[in-house]
Length: 242
Image (cartoon, rainbow, N blue to C red; front, top):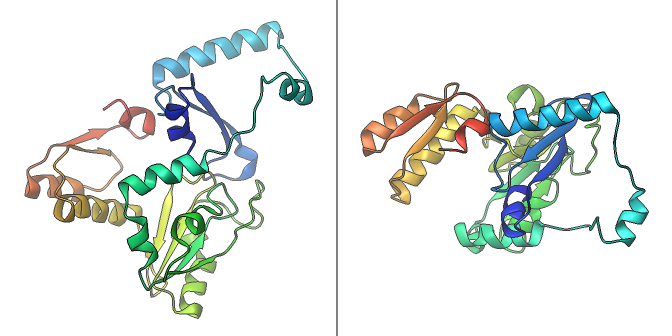
């Protein structure tokens, strides 16, 4: 939502205060470029240079939040509506809502809380959200959607005889999937399945980009469907420019 909102609002950039999938003590600034992408190494180096200068000189302009709000310098903005509207152009949400499935969602106390209900409620689908309170301390868990951290989700799926479980990390840019038996699907498996869906079902033929830690199943799919596959170092900042 932040990335898309940056584009729609024609902002000069965006900052997300997050620990991502790490414990809360690792919270920091994640900078988004004017294109809504992660900052390139060049931009990151420029930011670090200015930060170093600011820390050295100690010159920091400050203003009370209340005054900034009164003067219109700071405004509160809900980007969820325009983000969901855009998703509806890319995915048939009504068809998904009418699927007779029971889905358990675990946002892991993070920013993704409430989004799946907004997207998929109102039809035949049964949606149950656990750990749905937004809490930046992520009480009792590490907000990384991997098997070791999804015991509650797996147990809930089996207890409620659900069809699938979905989990998002602290800032909701990572997705974990658990099947109807409570078994975790690795991100490598999920990425390959998504690529297969785009190629086989939607018949898309654009190039695919994977980082060096991603699955080589993507390379095999590229060979089968005759589409190029590009490998990059790990990080959105390397993937986005391609």
